[in-house]
Image (cartoon, rainbow, N blue to C red):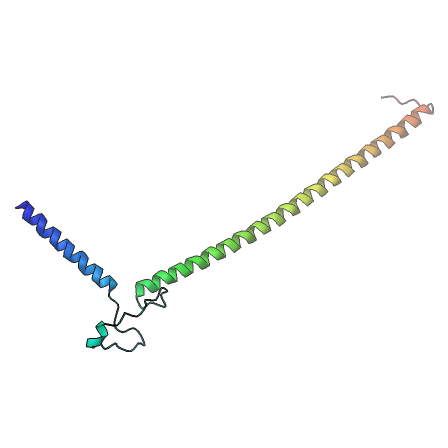
Length: 139
């Protein structure tokens, strides 16, 4: 009983696969804007027209959606890439500006320290000169 069942299932699957293969290789008789083909007795001797390798605007909505999605994804990737490059350029410019500000602040700090040291030295020399004149300063 199981052998008969498996034989019937195998035969059905083979028939289904053969039908699917024939359906995939069959070409429609008329496309959009094409003239319907009329077959005659002598048409069987003629070779079929060469198949096109490129698909031009399919009418299948799933194919159209797939193509539209692929186009949208390509545009998105291109926009994301350019946006990322722009962001990198802005970050580099901001980093360079920050470094320049830090350099300027360090120079200002160094100049302020030097000025304070000079003032302190001048004050110390001025006090030493007044003490050297004979004035006693008591602490």
